[in-house]
Length: 370
Picture 1: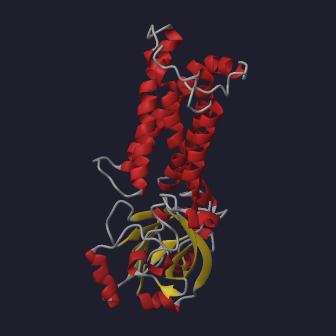
Picture 2: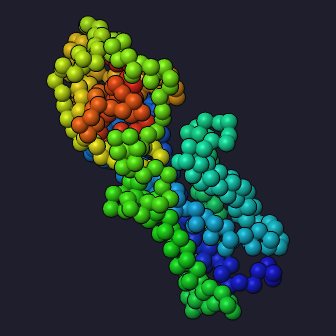
């Protein structure tokens, strides 16, 4: 420890950064867990259709706190790493627990932030399925965090309770502790300002680091997931398109695009909220999903599975009874007054309030009443 002479390597500063990192990680964990439950809901979980923009807020918080945690984690590691070289390496049972918890805590934190940032940029230099890997790593990390907090609670309490008279004592030519905290806070603020605009419209012009900026793309919003050659071919010979409504129905329906356009049309302003953090409110027009279910002779409080004609990881989307009965849940044919671009799901895509963008299935081919 004698080699680490900077006054910044203090238990008090480490405790303050640890508290901030714990809050940030907790928000990120809860909102991420919620997103996972929404996308793959267990039998006991039902996600409502209202408030319309709730998922927009929760997922925006997830991505924002993930970005903000990067400078926090780096600062915390720099402040605390001299403690790794303290002698004796193990000073008791509680100290052993603390040391052991550091392996999954630090490793899991770096894994989550590194893979999370790459996922937002759609770069996957690994062979595992990102949501599954991220999900289990989050549980391991948050478990290690709880153990670490338990092991360090008394030390942190004592450090925070000490006199603050030396808090701002600088090293010659170096930062004061207050200055260091200000620099970390500034880095967090800068990252937030330059990324949060993908969710928070007033900051949109500052979203320089956001990989997806609302307003950019075909029909004025980003494309996530492009159509296959077969899908594009269908769009080019639309006379062959048929939407099938089947399952637990009295009458199976097969509807062409012209048939759908002839039905009663509904319009609504709804946000499309991507799991990668960006969101944008657009005006959608199409056929209420509940109208099609009733036309097929099924109860309006049914559960529905919507299937895309393009196979893939998210080619099936579940619509629970609360979402089905919401008047703004529809099979959209137009966005902002124009027929859907093929990149956005032409001829038909699912859209509904308070749904992750990945569950708003594009290129819809089948509606199955469960």
